[in-house]
Length: 349
Image 1 (cartoon, rainbow, N blue to C red):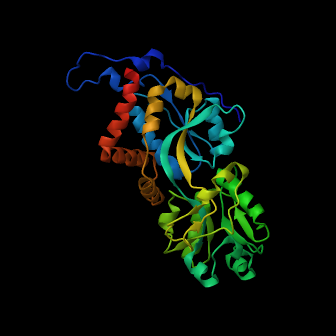
Image 2: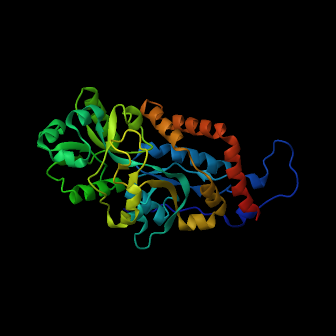
Image 3: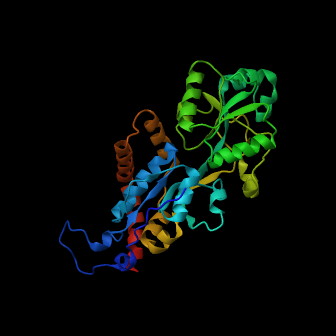
């Protein structure tokens, strides 16, 4: 896919402009909006659990004067391509190291910056607790047993059905790798469809008393609808099998203290990920004020988790997201003001 939208880069001396004299009360000093005149566009993949990140960072950048355009809706791989090529400036939901496969492409012209959520993103496989107890399910290996496959077979193909990830997502690539590595192709049918719709179907099945198996990550609304330890349990993998670009992180795939896991420590089989902004190199180099803000800002995982639950329960319109973002910013104003001041200081240097 070719993106033709040109970036508007109007930074230059604009960013360095400051005023030494005092302005009347209520007036906005030029130095308070050093990004004025510069447009910014986020690439937004088809995973609504991260839309709140775009909403918060949009408002933060706007407070510095940046003109944040409507996001470019795409999917995960094309979002990275858009940022690299410059038809978008920032991608809001970089999962690293899971997404290293995109960053490592030859000629990739973007880089991660800051940490939205540092080492707070878990991934793995979950089973409804009733079935885990009934069939003594501890790991993916248990899905080799005929009685387990039959219980979880909702399509009649003789395999257990599992909600996976849409094609092209980093998690879809890793799930596919693990299914091959564990030789589970004859045992598990991975559903690679729209995630929210597939999980809504699985939750409906659970409500009807049917067994369910699914992949998820945190933060995510699924662990609000299906609470680990109560409704579902994290199960383990037989051993850690990761794609080559993640193998050096194998030690992080076994985690202590995972509530709702069948074992402690819990061999989830997935590295703990950082959620990071990924920015076009030219945009970040030309806009050091924005870059500083992105380095400073972060979001608590609990906030994203609660917002995802609210969104799933109907508060999911663009206006809702704007309000949720604004409420969080106003509730953390002192911290936010510190981030903004650090960014403005860059313009004054």
